[in-house]
Image 1: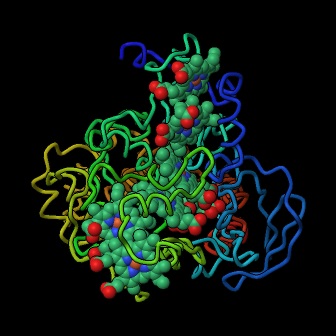
Image 2 (image 1 turned 180 degrees about the vertical axis):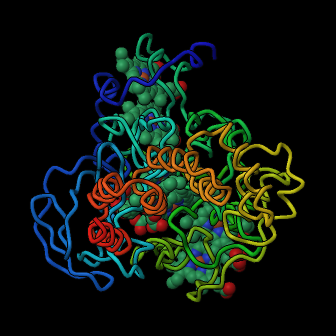
Length: 470
Ligand code: HEC
Ligand code: HEC
Ligand code: HEC
Ligand code: HEC
Ligand code: HEC
Ligand code: HEC
Ligand code: HEC
């Protein structure tokens, strides 16, 4: 165990000389190919969410501007989304390729945008599931190193833990084999990416990004699912669905993801698995999952089709309204976790939990500040958030607004400047700054922002105003 603790990540390429068969098979899977730099992209012309787009020379072109297409997310099993880089900051592009439809369309969540939406920040958590050895720049919301991640897709060490000690002195026992772990640690290997529930709240002082294969998920985060369960399917709901199945309830720890999936080849082992446990069941000659694990649309993946992991007796197609109340998953939850989870979902039940939360650390203070009706008390909470987390964008923007009301213009300006270091596409900070800075400086600020978001109506009209006044 000491050796493991000291081990560092060395990259999948280092495993290849000794594990060539596994390496080559795994390279063909969707997980291995889940992200990377865009090398080339076929030209296209289409419209999505009411906007005309063209793709040419690795650029997305639209009326009023264009954006580079730099990284992809998604192997194309269901689809592929794209990221654009601006001075090291990553933004998700508004269009996605849908493999089943063989067509471009709006990215999930972008269906209703009136303007072409170019400023959605790609946070490290997105890349943590789709890429490996991700390199976020501290103190920013969406800036990354160059390259932003050292390995494309899900690398060997995401499921096997850091491999330096093992590669140095190869043996069983100095590298994680998920199949040999205690069930909760074994399941965590897959759940680190295949489980989000309704909310996933980091424990105080823990960083989810530091999770390693072999750890227990509940030491890093508290998970919540909807009390009544989801009837619909979500991209990351396989774990909770399986947990709710009669098979899992009945078979317990004997059943896990690895029972039906071979992670290195993605071979489907489900037929022998079903028959292994249900030797006397009907229809032994037929494919059980056709009826018992039907495929239907995922609610959050736009056109994606998913397999129902609740293994129902009778398949149902109707989807249900959201969220009754939250119930903890993978272990108990305290007031802090409940409060943060309800707050994340915009549910009014947050307030009471948050007021009782222990510790009242910065994530709690940030949520309380938003709920706080007294502006002076809200400002104190924001100050406190910024002492612990000096680049929190929401705290910077909101405290800046408060400083203006107090007549403390200089301080407001420096808070908004700082917000733009965390993420240069925070429109509110840019627009606010143009109200307090000299015209020339304001014009430069707007031009810089328009380089990221050339179709912003507010920025364009503010620029026109300032130019007219000049
Ligand atoms: C220098 C050769 C070498 C390198 C490099 C190497 N391995 Fe191994 N690996 C071995 C040998 C030898 C075994 C033991 C096989 C046995 O005893 O059956 C092994 C066993 C394993 C096992 C099974 C452990 C168990 O307890 O069942 C895993 C998992 C594994 N390696 C993963 C990796 C990964 C991931 C990498 C890259 C980070 C890697 N190996 C790099 C040689 C190597
Ligand atoms: C580091 C994150 C991560 C881990 C760990 C992980 N997965 Fe995945 N998995 C993904 C992502 C991301 C995809 C979607 C890949 C794509 O199509 O782009 C995926 C896709 C899959 C698929 C669908 C494959 C296909 O061909 O469409 C299966 C099955 C799967 N994972 C099983 C597992 C199992 C079993 C484990 C644990 C042994 C596991 N995953 C661990 C992130 C992860
Ligand atoms: C908690 C982990 C997690 C996070 C965070 C996450 N994803 Fe995924 N994503 C997955 C898994 C797991 C799948 C595969 C689901 C499946 O195959 O059913 C997936 C599937 C996809 C797919 C379809 C891939 C394919 O080829 O079929 C795209 C595109 C995608 N995600 C984009 C994104 C983007 C963009 C972000 C961030 C803005 C993101 N995801 C954040 C886990 C995650
Ligand atoms: C998505 C998770 C995942 C990824 C990624 C992954 N493995 Fe594995 N690996 C497993 C699991 C689970 C087992 C245990 C399989 C079993 O015994 O049921 C395993 C077992 C092994 C073993 C020992 C037994 C065997 O099947 O040979 C070796 C060696 C190994 N993996 C090497 C690698 C290498 C090398 C890579 C990268 C090319 C890799 N693995 C990527 C999940 C993963
Ligand atoms: C590790 C053992 C195991 C595996 C693998 C397994 N099951 Fe089960 N399954 C059970 C147990 C235990 C029960 C609950 C007792 C019972 O009904 O036999 C159950 C229950 C069921 C039920 C009844 C569901 C209900 O709502 O009452 C169905 C249907 C079912 N399984 C189908 C399948 C299919 C199809 C597969 C393969 C995709 C499968 N099972 C794989 C152990 C397993
Ligand atoms: C009882 C068997 C069984 C178990 C256990 C199981 N799966 Fe699956 N899974 C399937 C089948 C069958 C499919 C559909 C495969 C196909 O059509 O190629 C599937 C498909 C998937 C997909 C692809 C997207 C989709 O929904 O079709 C992902 C991702 C996935 N499983 C993840 C997991 C994870 C994570 C676990 C563990 C929590 C798990 N599975 C446990 C049988 C199982
Ligand atoms: C053509 C569709 C279909 C296929 C294929 C199928 N089943 Fe079923 N199965 C059903 C339906 C429908 C029910 C519910 C029947 C009922 O309630 O009378 C059911 C019920 C079950 C039950 C619960 C029985 C009980 O008394 O509660 C199990 C276990 C089961 N199936 C296992 C399997 C296994 C294992 C396979 C593959 C070897 C399989 N089924 C193939 C449609 C199918």
